[in-house]
Image (cartoon, rainbow, N blue to C red; front, top):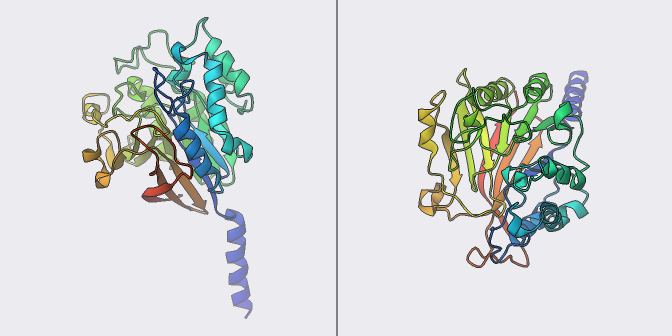
Length: 351
């Protein structure tokens, strides 16, 4: 009887150490069309974003990550501040539920930047709640969040870019300042069993040929740090959902989740083979794809908007890509009762 009690005490103590299961969601790229087509308002695909915000708010999530391209950013869609306010209104179901939203800028939030630095000023005024614990020159833009047994590190990929930056080159001598050294330092200092790093651009070429591969030395340093700490990279920029892995320099497969499916027009996943020509010549391994050409998608699925839901239970994590299946994709109209259905499921284990 005494031995049994000891076993029960040990098991119960372990459960307390890990805590109860908890959830978070990630999505990005909710920008609307430059021309303001149906379903878009002030540069935001409000009909799709609001529908997914309703669904996420019902998931019992602790927080939301949104790594960039909230808005179109173009002047024809209105002032940047007004576009971002429209985005916040579309996300009202999340904000009204007092669920923290951690966001940072994509390339479209940098478009209206005359005079220089004005885009950052607009951002800081509208999102003053962002953590201020990042590097001194990127306060509120690059930051770290600890929640339960996880560390989240988000970083701005635009404010520190070199003046010589050229999105058509894959050369670290001209392209640098994308991954702040602070990010690598924080990854290497992480003690939590779960680590999620989120940035706007993909680490590897997908549809966009501009990505972190433009600055290969910084991208590879990020990838090696993630590999050493069992980290996951969450991003967008490509308007699709892709779950894939790419090896670090020690051949450890690092998971990348492209979740750029929050309302922006769909892109095909058509340039991935170009990765073989640059840097370490690494072509990622696709595990699940939902992009702009249905015939090439996993299970032949049509393109969907959606978000990824993570459920962390101790050292186990279940991920679900939840597609907005009853949205009117022809007319860009939202249903009265959004239905987000799991179309991809995966599991992760902490080291």
